[in-house]
Image: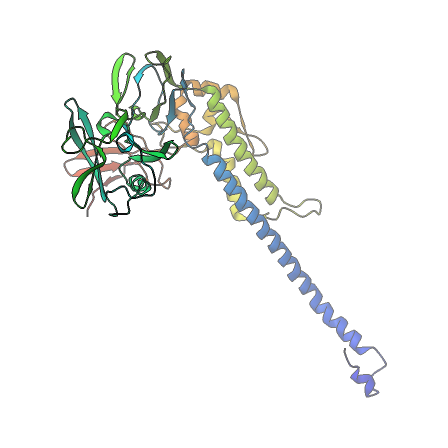
Length: 439
């Protein structure tokens, strides 16, 4: 509480001097404090708006990333047992073929059932301390030819159970799997399955203290002192089918080298489909492409509307948006509004524009699609649609492939030559760079 010293000394004119002094101090302080508070509130609102913008940009990136690789190619199959998926949009193209599947690829399945009597426990010691699996081909004879894949599992003498063997096989990196099945009450079998393909058949041997034992053995080529204690449930085989009448075999049901950029998966083909002609195709779809483009435009318009709302100027005494005048926001808005007139380079000898596909900028800055113009351009240049959604590195020679570890590369068209002095890369401006590698 302020003390009135002047009144205490009977000095002054009887004015309330403390009140006057406080008023003078407030007259100096309050406006400055008000400006500080207003600046603090403005900064707080702007920080909050920037946080919201960051979240919106993250959502925009997530939604548009889901469109990556969607180039308007529709994949179809006349049977659910043969499915197609696009794995490399940069080299995928149209095709239509007849496929006739005779058989699918299988891994060999062996049933280790202790010579027919089954194992009575999955935890008791089974009498081995080493197990070796070789992969290869069984021929008539029988004769086994290894494909070079082999694994030996070192186990614990006196404490190796059926469970231990299963886990050791499943933890290996040779593609063999194992599972324990209770075939009847108190009787167990170990089912072992090899990878798909006729060259991935199994040979299994076991030993204890360095001496071969027949506890878990499948080696028909070497009967020796021990009979095989496993039976073959399914033999290893390759997939066999025809494409437009041409015979084809593959060691796996997931086939990546049949059509460029497309994976073909063969499932359990039913008896009614075996030996029956089916149609598989990859076709540019105007409907699919337009739907994808509508999603792109919708995402851009949503982001642009958000930016416009946050950066709008104040009118009629009302406050503007919290990011009004922000340089980054103005730059981002400008980039979006110029999307239709900005060239997308590197996809063809000629530059591609969003406006080619009928994307136009309206008076308010948002985008819309002229569907008539879209259909005309897409019909004439469907392969250009990849420029809208997909980052890719492509070459004009099947013998030369290109790749980029990230999307952070300079887009453009480059000339590549391999001469006596080594490879050279020339950009669209005629600048040539010699390339070399060292260790």
